[in-house]
Image (cartoon, rainbow, N blue to C red; front, side, top):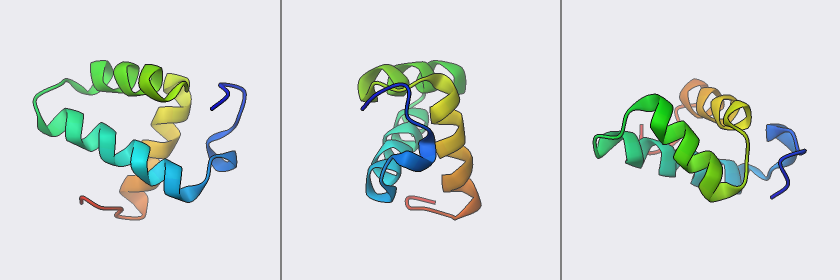
Length: 65
């Protein structure tokens, strides 16, 4: 996934996978800032993209919320 893509250009299915990975990392004790960095690296995105996906997941109550 290119870092140049906006969060909206990533499929909803993929954004939900990213959100799940982020929540899972935080649920297992990883801090918020570190989890964002780790998940960004894992999915080849920027932290800013991760933040947008995170906010969308919270706003839309995506699982596992």
